[in-house]
Structure formats: C-alpha cells, structure tokens
Amino acid sequence: MPIILTINAGSSSIKYQCFEMVDEICLAKGQIDRLNSSKPELTYHRHDGTNYQLELTAQPYQKWFPLICATLTSPQHGIIDNLEVITAVGHRVVHGGCHFSSSVLIVPSVEVLIEELSDLAPLHNPFNLQGIRAIAQFLKEIPQVAVFDTAFHQTIPPHAHVYPIPYHFYRQHHIRRYGFHGTSHNYVVQRAADILGEPIESLKMVSCHLGSGASVTAIDGGVSVDTSMGFTPLAGLMMGTRCGDIDSSLIFQLINQHQMRSDQVMELLNDQSGLLGVSGVSADMRDLLSQLSDEEETSEQILLALNMFCYRVSQYIGQYAATLGGFDVLIFTGGIGENAPRIRTQICQKLGFLGIQLSHQQNISKEREKTIHSELAAVKVLVIPTNEELMIARSTLQLL
Image 1 (tube, rainbow, N blue to C red):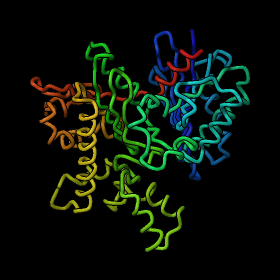
Image 2: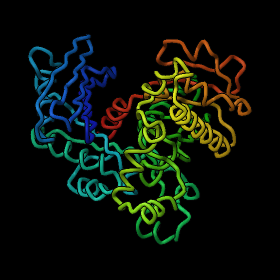
Image 3: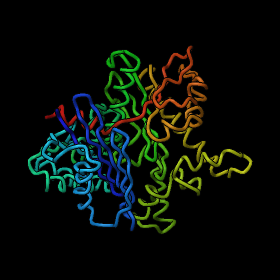
Image 4: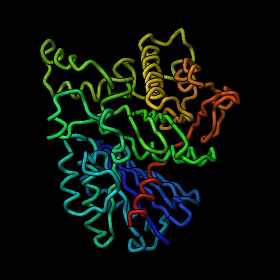
C-alpha cells in the first residue's frame, strides 16, 4: 500500500498531506502558518474527523519538518506507525526554468538547479529547497520527488513563450514565459474531463486559477498552449498584492522620477499593488466583498479594485478564446474562483458572445464542485476545487 507524503513549503507557511494511494485517500493533512511571526500555528486534520490546533513558538525553518513527521506518527493523533512506511515524499517546487518539463527524482544535481533558479522565485524556491534538505536528513533512504509548477507549461509553443526582445536573451539566458500554477491547472482540466465524461484530448478549455495569486491558462487537448503569468509570477492578472501586466516603462518612471531603488520597485509591484494597492484596504477578496453589503458606503477605491480584477480576467478569457479558436469549457478554481459567485458573475457578464451563460441558481449553490452554466449555454462552466497535493502525490507515485 503506497504511502506518499507531500510537502508544499513556502516563506510564510508549510502545507503537508499524507496519502494512501491505492484509493487516493488523504489520511491526514496539516498546515503551519505565520512562520514569520512570534506565534506560529499548526492546524491538523485527520480523515476520520479528528482535528486540532497548536500555538507554537518561533524556531529555525528546518525545525518544522521533524514536527510535521511527529504529527503523522503521534500515538494519539497520528495515522502511521513509523516513518519507514512512507514510500516517497513529493515536493512542490515553483520554478523549474527550462530544465524540467516533468517531475524528477531529487538528486544532488537537481538540488543545484533548483538553487540556481531561486532568483526567479525568491519567495518559493529557497524554501522548497530547505524542505527537501530537511526531509533528507531524517528520511535518508526514502526517495524524494520534485513536482514543478512550471512543468505543465513547457508545452507552450515558441510564438507564445518567447518575448519580443533581442533573441540572444532567450537563447543564452533562457528569458521567456514560464507560467505557474501548472499543477493546479493540470488537476482541474483532468477533473473537468472526468466530470463531463469526455476524453480530454477532444476538449479546448480555459482554466482560471483565482486566489491571492491568479492566472489563466489556455489548454488544448489537455496541453497548455498559453498562460498569463510569465518569466516570474508577477505578470498577467491583477492579484492580491501583485500588479500583473503594466507598461514596463513605469518601472523607469518610478526609479527616475520618484527616486526609488530597484529593490523598492520590486517590492512595490509584488507586495503593495493589486487589490491591496488599488483598494487601500486589503489584499483579501473576502474583505473587499464583505463591504459590498451596503454599496452606498463602499468606497470608490474598493469598487474600482473589484471591477479591475474582473475586467482583466474577462480580457484573458477573450484572448484565449482567440488563441484556441473557440473553446468548450471554462473552469474556475482557487480561493476566489471557488468561493466568490459574485466575482464569477461579473467576469462572465459580457462573455455571452463566446457562448458563456451562467445559471444563477447553480452559481450561488453551496456545492463545492459543480457546473454553473445554463442549459442553453454553448460553453460548459465548472467550479472545481483544486487539489495540487493529490497531483503531487500522483506524479510522485507515477515517477517511482
């Protein structure tokens, strides 16, 4: 009975799940949040309904991984007798650059390449790598697998992934569109084909992963052919704190006219922009939507932020309709995509010319996984909760 542990290590949180892969059952999952605060918190859920939370004390990053294993083997709340029963560990690694088009067994040369790519994903790759090395210290004989967010998008053709700058930057330095959220997009398009009972090879789909980070991907026959994020996760849609697409000359305006350093500009565009920057209130869509109950009291900036977010998603859906020559399925996933029917409605409001028409009752229903298109709509519209961890576990087992 294969047991796969998945690790998603980020700068401010570490998520983990333990799967029994014969029936693809998540035996237990946990998350350590607020790692940068004085009081981190562990949340743990077991498949039989046993849950608990612990307030922790701050400690070095590598120390969290023995704690994760301790929760899984705990006599009171654990789900395995000892760590030796774990078949393999699958790690989410955000940036694989041009080196990786699929999941790989982690060996020293792979670690070197992940480290070299840290400059392109500074909030992800260094922490992904720390998780890999920490697990290796006390699970020495257990194989580890890297599952890359960028791998799914390696099928994007050159005319869509090469930037229109001097070609030697692409040839010599691999500067190109890479795309992200690939594990999520891959999962939901496979799930959509299962729900519709149609072969994935026959479907053209547009997948919208909308959360604090957000991206749209065009998928033809299960293969990514274009995506909104680029060389880094900063490009594309307006996000929680990221600006998305802007005129690149704005960067020089900020440096030359506002006396900002390059690192300050980078922080501004990544951490102070998007929903947070425009609304002036919050990067969290839930906070902004909660203020819409009385629209007379909602600030113009909040309304503008919401309208900008929906407008840009609609634009990308229309753009990818052109890329695909029309499409059959539109998917919403991610925290916003799954849980904000008002946002889904506004995004789709002007897309009737593409054959998109929502059912109001289905859209607002409490089901987590559902179809929300009207009976007469030409394009099927689905809400599918993403499951990146299950995709990581599947990829890990398949590789082994």
